[in-house]
Length: 520
Image 1 (tube, one colour):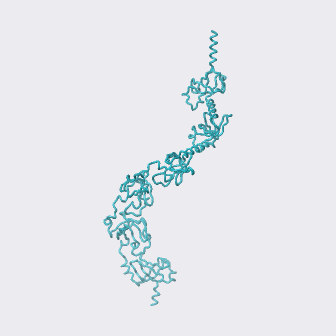
Image 2 (cartoon, rainbow, N blue to C red; image 1 turned 90 degrees about the vertical axis):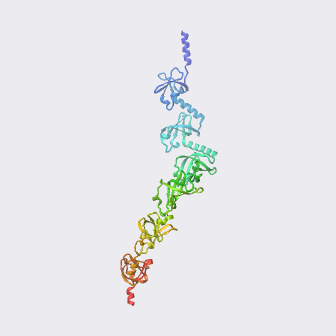
Image 3 (cartoon, rainbow, N blue to C red; image 1 turned 180 degrees about the vertical axis):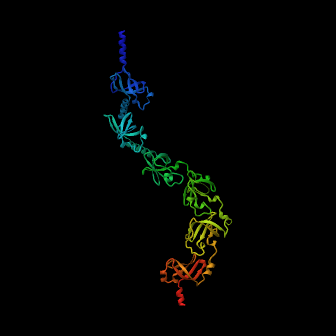
């Protein structure tokens, strides 16, 4: 019996592994608690590892793990094991045996420290200096815990430490990407890029190590005024390679070319005389742009908006976003232009002008502009009217219509005639009153002497008021210079009627009355 016990004891001790501090051995997970993991490594006692060493590891899915022997037997007779140190030791061996300074390696940033970050590579912690991180303007959640490529800057095999650089890794990655792009680039290829910067003429796109130019003309099938209408800095887009020059390092890109050309078969979509509805996208002094469909715009020229109105403030009449109905009048595929018309949806009022306007009738309208010797009027039915200076007043000589008439002010007019060639109604203002000249001729016969009041003094004569609203001119030859020097506006002056011309509303006066009397 004693021999049997001795043999069993010998067999037991033969089955127990000999462990050495600092070695890495295989261990089987026996049980799990809230704080500990119990490991059987084939020794006479089981080892315990704190559960916190397994942070980030799905321990429930593991049966066997590598562990590091820290102490074969502590004061309580337990084996002290470490999962973390085993992983670090294995990771360090992988790192030093497979990589050298200058190589790229993938790692995870998991903690921020003073002056930089702690990076884990194969379970080994290394240091990433802030100056080499390339994480400027990054939020912490965009960095930790995230995986990146790093370049090994320094590796201390004795101390088991290393320093990495994300900045140099990015530079190296871009160089590799740049070479790859130039080796494989093809016209017509679609590539993903990021908007790097925007200028007035286009945008520069980072294709992953190589920059290309996306010209404003190649951004959209529709007309745009600035690249910012289509792209934004930092956004990613799909672009087409339109052309490239390896020697000069230039790449031309296209965005609109990645979508079908909306101008293909445009004549079939919008033939002439088609009535369309569209949204106003732009308003200029010369007309309004209307979007017919995405990428297709047409122009309604100001001359195609109203049959009658020639003076139109488009900004006051229309607003961007308004929906308008118009007729297609021309499609220019080569010039990529579509001409539209609003007025052609209605009948031209000048085709039936006699039924709209009657000569000698009274009509209302507002002054909308001034010309040389005339004023332009928008009459109440929308037609254009014109009044010439000589039809403004019976007795005043009008050199500029704005001396009497006010822009945007409404007046009542008399229809004097119809100018079909220029599509204008000829108007009169003075004709609303009786012609006062027969009465003036009777009241102010030639030779009559009158006490007048000086209105204005010019270098060619003196204007004198001889009745309410009635003025005459004393030419410089009909008044002594000494007398003129004594006059001012409002001065009284005795004058004689020497000439009256009702057609030109002119009355000629003379101030040499006493001189003529003495000569007689």
